[in-house]
Picture 1 (cartoon, rainbow, N blue to C red):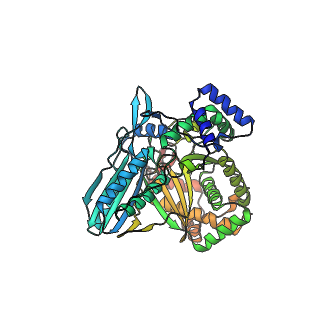
Picture 2 (tube, rainbow, N blue to C red; picture 1 turned 30 degrees about the horizontal axis):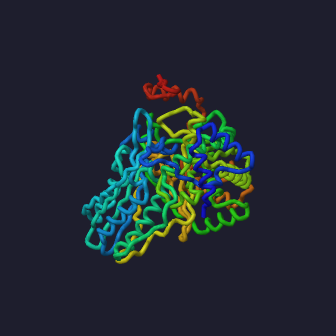
Picture 3 (cartoon, rainbow, N blue to C red; picture 1 turned 120 degrees about the vertical axis):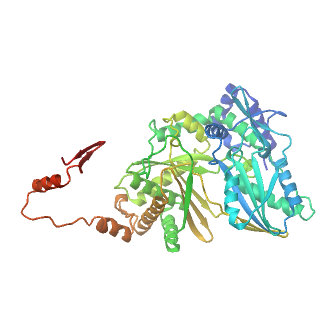
Length: 531
């Protein structure tokens, strides 16, 4: 339980002018204390317009660039099997909106000053419609893609699709500016608790929330301004340096001048034998499965690009405080994990290198990604994301996909990915059924066949690493036997018989006589025919 003296201390700190807050922060640092050890307190006034968090500011900027994009929508879909109590469902959403200010927040723009305004009440409308199984997938994807207006609240959209009296699909879509993946899990869990009680004619009392998202946004800004931003930024500046390279993967098409965030996804399940080998390797090397899979992805990118400086974005939940665990809001942060690879390095050495960088990043995880971009000032381009162009995310044990409610069976409904925030995103998920991997790719850059080949090559490197961690990275095989035979033997079968006792220049002369207009040489944009 948080102590009142600590809350009072933080409350006084948050109300201090900037200079006095900086002095307070320095005193804590000199005593070996961290402000991160203290609770988050609420110090706002009634009806006060609160600042956006740093992450929300970037979302606002991205939305203004492309207000019709669905790249930053946070979707969820639930299949409800059984007799649905619609009145209980509506009451459940009303309770959620009353509990979480994020669900009744809109953005306010006044003379270039952006704030978030919490509405006193929010009526979460449930749009109802009928559909059939054949049209269900299309309808769900259409609801997910429908754009938001961030200036109008609430930024939660609920659609109930009826297949028949005993079968419904509930589609939930939030904008990332007020939510994240963890938040969607919180909302679904609390929705189930509320519905279970209301459908039985009972009241439901959830554990009170100590703060709201607006309190966190205000606290985050004042903590960073007091000195924490400078402390953590020093580490990232030293690591990433002044030059921010763009990962040069071989693309199927030229990169467009502006990202359209169109994407697709391919899923695979890793072979159980390989998973067993990966876990044994991680244990022997003293690393987590996350670190091992990240290292393998870094190796894959090194082999594909030929670049030694590999930078991968890694999202972190940023819920390392008890006050934020049960909140709906945009907390997730992104870190840039940098690897310096060398072909002579072994995979065992890469694992320890990745482990060290991951632990250092964890010790400097509070700096908002947006502040890092602002400080490093990479060359801005609408064609790719700054600081990194690929992302890796690992989840251990996903939430249960099936829940039982009074009169209802609730099943998570998978939906097809149609967006891609980055060139590539590799998501791995460890469940009771095994280890799954999903590769999301920008369809402006890559074909589906290329994405499938990338997954095969990544798996090939994984198998090679498990088999021998002492081999140099440059010697680990990506190709399977079939692909190796095709490239080295079938595609390279260029042997042919030429006339004997003739000079090469005589053969060229004969070709020039037969086809004088045929292209003989190509250099850049210049073409020369035989004539």
